[in-house]
Length: 335
Image (cartoon, rainbow, N blue to C red; front, side, top):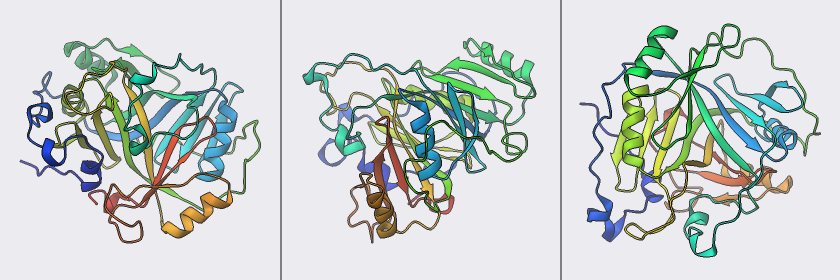
C-alpha cells in the first residue's frame, strides 16, 4: 500500500490539531469509496473556470504578474495559459450574493487566506484531462456510477460535465500535454497592463483550497473517479495528490471550530496556490510591494519565511480573489 503523504503545511491549516486530535468531532476515518474505481488517471489541469465582475482587469493582472499568456479574448471571457501545463478561463458577469449575517462569518477565514478586499470572483468548475480517453466508454463509466454527463465538444476537444458530491462543476476531458495549448498564445485583452511585468515562471500547482460540506465523501469520490492519491485524514481535511500536476486540500467547509454548528455553505475554492521558479522571499515581497500589492506571509505556521520549509505569500487580485504564490515545486511537493 502506498504511503500516505500529508505535508505539515497542510496540517497547520486544519481544524483538528493539538487537544482536538482524535476527538469524536475530529474523526480521521476516511470514507468508503462511493463506487468502483474507474482506473482513470488525471494527466492534465485543462483549465479552471472563474467568473468575476471585471474579467479584462483580472486577465491583465494574471498575465502581467504571473506571466500567463492570453490565448483568446472574445470580449466576454479570456482564456489564459498557465505556463505550458494548465489554463484559466475568466468570464465576466459576476454578481455578488447578499452578505450573510455577521454571526455566520467564519472567524478563522483570515488565517486561511481570506481576501482583504470584497470578493467579486468565484471559481465555478475545474476541467481535468484523463488518460485512456474513449468518449463512449467515459460516458458509460460516468452513468454507471450514478452521474449525469453532459457532452461539451469543440473540434478535437472532447469532454463531459458532471457535478461532484458537493455540487461543484467537474469537467472531464481528453486533454493532455500533446493536444492542448499548441502554438503561441498571442491574444490581447482590453484592459491595459496594471503594472510592469515580473519575470516569474509558474511551474507548479501547489494546492487548491477546496471547502465542501462533507470533505470525506468528496475525497473518496475523486480518488475513485480520477485516480487521485489521498493523503492522511487530519479530521477536518485531507490533502490529495493529483497525479504529477499538483495537490488539493479538501476541507470541511464552514470555518468554525469542530463540533460548533455553522450555516451550511456551498462548495467553494477559497484560494489557489501556484509555485514559481527561483522563489526568493525577499525578492518576491519586493516585487509585490513595488506594484502596490498586499503580501501576507504564509509558512503554514512553521516559523520565519526565510527558514521555514514552506514559503509563500498571499495577495489579492483586482476582483478580490485570494492568490497565493509559493516556493513549492514538484520536487518540493511534500514540504
